[in-house]
Image 1 (cartoon, rainbow, N blue to C red):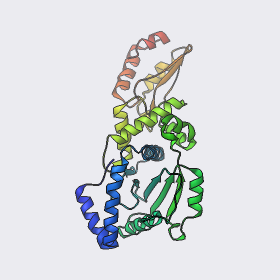
Image 2: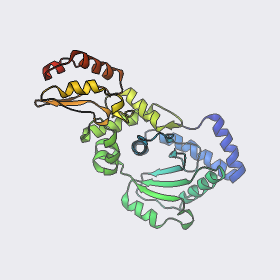
Image 3: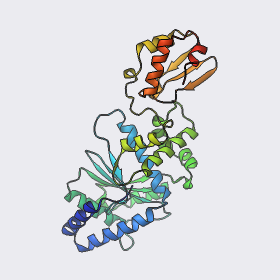
Image 4: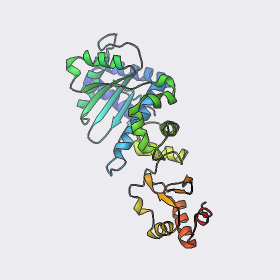
Amino acid sequence: MADQSTEDRAELVTLIKDLLGEAACAYVQNKNRGGSNGKKGTRFEDFYTVFQVAKLACANLDKLSAWPSLESQILAFVDDLVISETSKKQYFQLKNVASLVWDGGEHPLAEDFRLQFALSTKLNEPSPTMTLVVADPELKARMEEKMPSDIEGFSSVEYFPDGQGSLNKLVFDSEELRDVLVPLARKVQPSYADLEGVFGVLMVGCLRHSGQISIDAVLRSAKECIPNMLAALDVVDVKQHVTNEFVSTLDSIPGLAYAFDKGIFSWTAFGTSAVFGVDCASEEFKQFQNTVVKQQPKTFDEFEGLLP
C-alpha cells in the first residue's frame, strides 16, 4: 500500500499549509518522503498491518455495513498505518525500538500526535485517534505512564510483538493474533502451521495493492491468489448454498458424517476424513451436489467415487 494520489496530496499540502503553517507543511512532506523510503522491508509494520486486517475482518464478516479501509505511509503526521471506518479514523505510529520518549528530538512524537489530531479535527474526520505501537511491553508501560496530559484524550499505546522477524515465532508468541486468525482459517481447529498460512496469504493480499484498500478487497485478493487457505468468507448462511436433496442423500449413506463449518463441506467415514476443495458458494460445489443427488450413492465408496 502506498501514498495518496498526486491530486489528493497536492490538495492536502495546501490545506495543511493554510491550517497549520509553512513549518508544519514542510515537516510533514519531509516525514512522508523519509517514511516511504524507509518503509521498504519494514517487517514489523507489515506484520502489524496484517494483524489489523485479520482483526477488522473478524469484526465485520457478519455485517452488511461498509467495510473499513486502510492505507500506509500517507501524507500525515502519524502515518505508518491509517484505518478508516464510518464512525472513526485511527492513526498508528509503529516504533520497534528499545527506548523512546514523547518529547525528545527535533520533532517530538507527542507533537506529531498533536498536529495530526489538529489536522483531523479541521478536516472533520470522525473521532480521530492516535496509537503508538511498540514491540516491548515494558516500553509500552513507560510510554503510557509518561504520556503528556494534553494528548491523553485521543492517544493510546499498544504492544505488539515483532516475532524477531519470524512469522512462526510471531504466531506462537501472540495469542491475540491467533485469536483473529482462527476464524479466518479453513479448518475448525487449525494448527499453528495453518495459522501461519492464513497470515501469509493475508500479507499477499495486502502487498498486491497500493493506496487505500478496503478489508474485503484484501480478503478477496488473498483468496484469489491462494483459494484453499481461507474460510468461506462469503458464506454467512450455508443453508443458502446446500440443498435439502443433497443433505437427504448424505444422511442415507451408512457410516458417513459430515459438516459445513465455515462454509466448507467436510466429511468423515471409516477412519478417514477430508475437506472439499472449494467453499459451498462455489459453482464447483453446486455441480457436485447435483451429481450426488442424481447418482444417489448408497455406500461411502460410491460417494467417494463421485468426488472431483
